[in-house]
Length: 227
Length: 345
Image 1 (tube, rainbow over the protein chains, first blue to last red):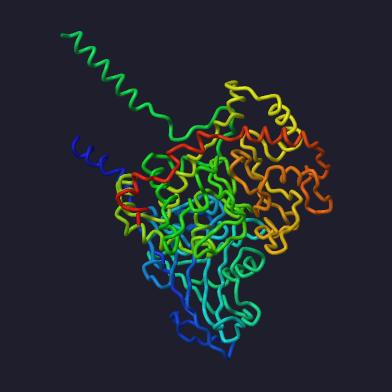
Image 2 (image 1 turned 90 degrees about the horizontal axis):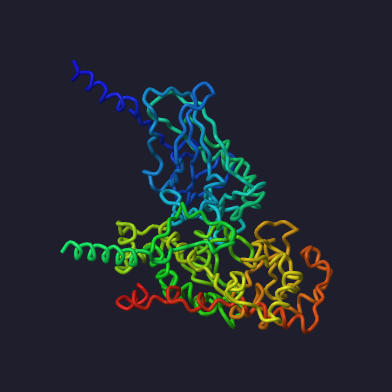
């Protein structure tokens, strides 16, 4: 009897901390097709084709919600999504077992506190090409490519969106309804980001400010849970 | 016999104590404010300080392995670039501003003349990446370090893991910079009642307190703020200071208030190194044109100093020279470390 009690007590902590890993996968699409870098892509509303050469961005502050209340908040929640490295597009969430959720909340970019916390490691290591050097601060979102209308050298465009000081703090929160499943699929539809973008006048954003702030508002439109 | 054992035990105890009680890696001089740097996020160790010193003196940080931090920041002159108005870089290129003196950086809040860097850890990224300075990128620096036997060994002894990352590299450079504390000038000794000012120095100190100390606040001799001190804009450099970072009209032509410690050796002065002599600096402050729109409020009322007053102020400023800091071997080129593997390359 004593043995059985000891056995049960011994297992209890394990049951309490049992984790049920949920995995998140980010899919990158354009016109509902898989986005392939360095290829000519027709945009729906335009006659011209666009080429995307770089897509890299931070996802941070991930939370799961059930009926409007936070039931899980990821600690040290900073993920660099780099479309060229498929491993970076999928990662686990170490949630408690049997968690119920119906919504996910995350931010595109890096919060202001991490921006002023000095050298950080992992996905925040400044060697990953997402930290400005001429001025302190993370680049939240990097999109580069070629559009024939861009009046720039080789028709190139570069959008490096970042900044952490008010009023130009372009950290955008995204909230999506999701099914209560072990895999959470999130789709980034790039044509939504580029909708009504006038490449004749907008070809480059490389500093924090109003332009970066305005551009970041497009992030709220580009994520969905359906293909 | 037993007595003998006790003597031996006592002797070994004192020997151990005397060996282990070396000076601390960092301490806050008495009467100084709390440092701004959060040491809990980057705990100092002698091994990491040694790596930082090696990195500071190694040209491995630059693209063609020719320029190190010490190329523009010389220990004997308060880590300033004496005699050079603007900083130098790779391929003989010349920068836009004067290389500032480096000391008491643990108390700094923002860095560079315009405060564009928000944390000491991130400071080194700017000169490493600037095309006029080292023209390198941190990812490639880390790649080169991971190929250097010297640095791999140094990182292994500090971290028990020879993997070199951007975070570790920057934090080690920071550790060395944090140790650059200058707090033993004649001025400090007078404040600690270990020495006395001459009557000229004392008069200079009183004049300094009345006319200069609101920005060059003791004991750091800077308030870590930005100010327009009335200098006319250089017509070639067209440098509008902190405005380029904040885009606020009120920041136009404002620059960081520099520390005055070791000022005897940190010439030439001002953000563009336009003054070679302290007398020129004082002459500027007594003849500021009052039309600059963002002129600092402390300078709105003209500063009136006689020729004798200026001489006295300069004699006081010379008491801010800290020879112990300027000539301390622990801040100098790590000859012994680099003897086997020159510059760690």
